[in-house]
Structure formats: structure tokens, C-alpha cells
Image 1 (cartoon, rainbow, N blue to C red):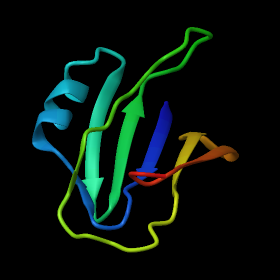
Image 2 (image 1 turned 180 degrees about the horizontal axis):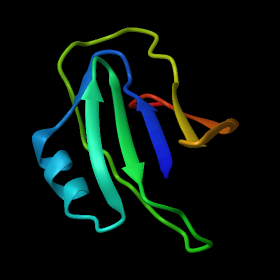
Image 3 (image 1 turned 135 degrees about the horizontal axis):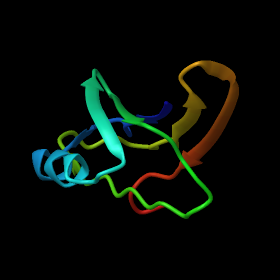
Length: 91
């Protein structure tokens, strides 16, 4: 099982429409939203490119917005962690 852990940008939340779109993707087994982190559980990944689009809604204006992280790891072997960052709006 693979986990994609997306830290949300400060002042943003995931839209309910986005959750519905993600739940309709067949490779996503489960989605959890805890505090400012979205966890997507996938049964497996293969060599095919996958695109996941999270629609976020700004609820608070934050100055000097810093990039947030995306972590991808194997549930059973979290030591092989892959980390990426994504910029804020207007960056």
C-alpha cells in the first residue's frame, strides 16, 4: 500500500468537491483529512504516470506563504520516503 501525504498550504482547505473527485478514482482506496494534511491510500503504484489534482479553497489570507510538502511512501516500508514541495498561489 502506498500513502500520499499532502500538507495543505497555510490558510487553505480541501474543497468537498475535490474529495468527491478523488473518491471516484479507482486506484485510491481511502482518503483521510486530518488537521491540515490529506492522506490518500493507494493499493499500489506502477510505471504509469498518475495525476492527482487537489482543489483548495483559501479561507484565510496568509502573507509570505511558504511551500508545502508532499510525501509519498510505502505503508509497510516508510524508510523509502520521497518528498516534494509545491508553491503557494501566485508564486
